[in-house]
Amino acid sequence: QVQLAESGGGLVQAGGSLRLSCAASGRTFTNYDMGWFRQPPGKEREFVIAITWGGGSTSITDSVNGRFTISRDNAKNTVYLQINDLKPEDTAVYYCAAKFRGRGSYNFWGQGTQVTVSS
Image (cartoon, rainbow, N blue to C red; front, top):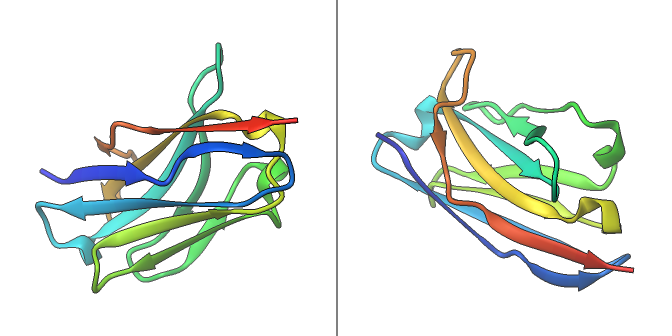
């Protein structure tokens, strides 16, 4: 099992920045690809960005390109999501997730951290 714990959410004004953290425990961190998802109010959870066990990164949501950056510190078993130029539509619960490297589905999830952006 992999345990994940997000932190760093909060209430920020549009245009501001936040850095979310996700601390992992339970298994060898470098064996896992890590991802960030978010669930806006009243909507389905969506994939935002991911980083492979080796440090490569991908993003899929056009609205976050250039504003969201993912990184990982394997020495601290932590993955980060840097969010710049926050917009009200970024308001969501942000979840960290893990999957064994190369596998298709994320099967370990954190409890989520709320990000609220005021206009």
